[in-house]
Image 1: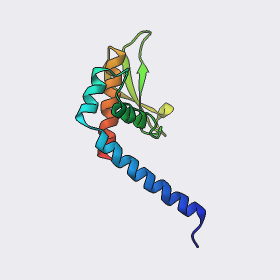
Image 2 (image 1 turned 180 degrees about the horizontal axis):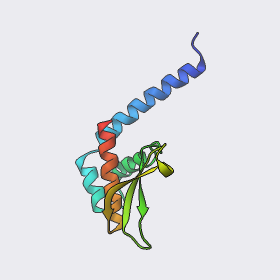
Image 3 (image 1 turned 60 degrees about the vertical axis):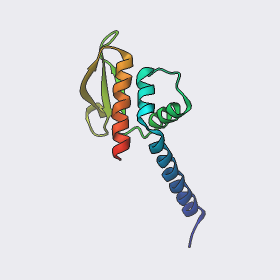
Image 4 (image 1 turned 45 degrees about the vertical axis):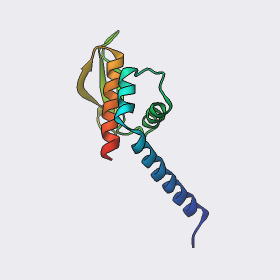
Length: 115
């Protein structure tokens, strides 16, 4: 017997498929170039939508910026459940915060487009 929970699950699946499809269409080289020009914003609508979607992704497997000193450099860590501290430090080091943002964006883009 079909329940309301089954229907809700079905609708959520349809929503996620459509959202993911739109995000893939929006994730163009132009969006990447716009983000690279100004990682702190302001962003046009399409770039902002992509940045928001990547930021709202599941925490597990997400890349985050880590401050490695009092005022930089910055590194990138990947949240990995089961690792010591649930974080794996990636080998990249950045000497500006904006470059660290660009690095995180590039990794998240790669992960999203490969999924």
